Length: 180
Ligand SMILES: [Zn+2]
Ligand SMILES: [Zn+2]
Image 1 (cartoon, rainbow, N blue to C red):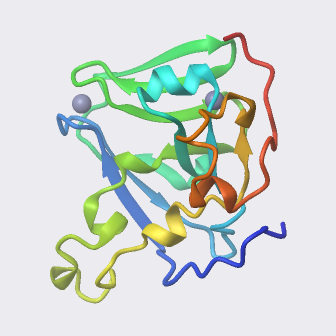
Image 2 (cartoon, protein in one colour; image 1 turned 135 degrees about the vertical axis):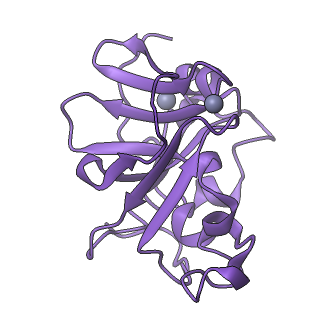
């Protein structure tokens, strides 16, 4: 889709890795060759996403579920919470990190940007990546906001309503009917 702001995404990753705060859950996601990093970057300011991320909004990069896999030896600490039936909010029951939003049976998984490893997000340790990751990582490609913003009716005046990230894509896109 056409984005409102002509964002330069910079280099595009072929994959990312990430995980939870305590380290018991780690994942890897590979991007399809034609992955649209703009269309798959969005945010939600619904009250459910605020509470489950404990932040002003949920910022994601969406990938095909078939391209996402767990790489930690165990996923025992992974739990799903359902605020809306069929919509899983995955989290680590050891440390509390919110790890995904996913419509069960749907084709995609929405990965919270904050769980992506620092190497990919902003280039921490890029010198040791053998050329895979550029100096500043892939943050712009992963979190550009061009794909749209849900529940902007919940914007906080003077706080979330004039952010460049939220201005980058259409507001009010894909609002889901959710109990709040
Ligand atoms: Zn954890
Ligand atoms: Zn939401």
